[in-house]
Image (cartoon, rainbow, N blue to C red):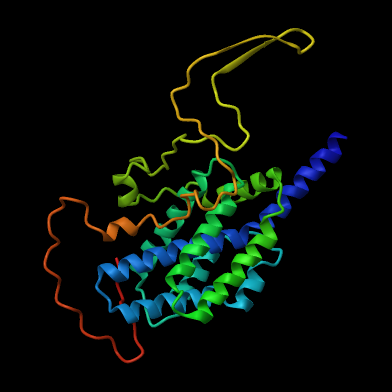
Length: 293
């Protein structure tokens, strides 16, 4: 019996490792769209050109042939191979990034999804994070009906693949993603300012809500030799412990754009400096920007 349980556990871990690839690429892709939008806005790129960049990137990312390949059973890629995927995606539009900008973009994408993943109260919330990314990306390309339709198709594919998974499978999926990120601790200035990251690059976790169906801490039961409860007592627990549904997409705040407020001046902030002289126009068919960071 022990061997059979071990075999089933090993099979679950192996299966979920093969199911990790779509979740990794979709969520990191969502972070990439957030970052590109923020940088294009910060550099005052023309609105129509910025929209075209995002639409081209999303169109390539959710190309049906690519999605079909992404969702097939396969082992999780290495960090290097994943970086190559996003190199091609980022340059699928008129935008061209130099090596330094691409390095910074990939680091921000990695730390953004790592933060979202680690702050899930329970592994099942990974589905909410993924769906939130997809819905936010769709809103940014909604002016193009064809691109929005591609996102809709991926949303349905995600539901079909992940909605029926049980808690053990989600736990194995999260373990696989954790192994991918390993000791990645790139410091992100916005995360440091907001207290989301420590000075050593580690993610700062906070306990605001309990996982669904979890009992609030502070309850002690005393049992006799037969396991029967003989008495109980409680003690106050200082952290808010309000549970919520694991699949409540509306109230989920994970998967949202962490960089959105970086484009909005804080109340009372000093006025921004005068804009820099615009760069020379790129050659015909060239990049929207070569150095976004």
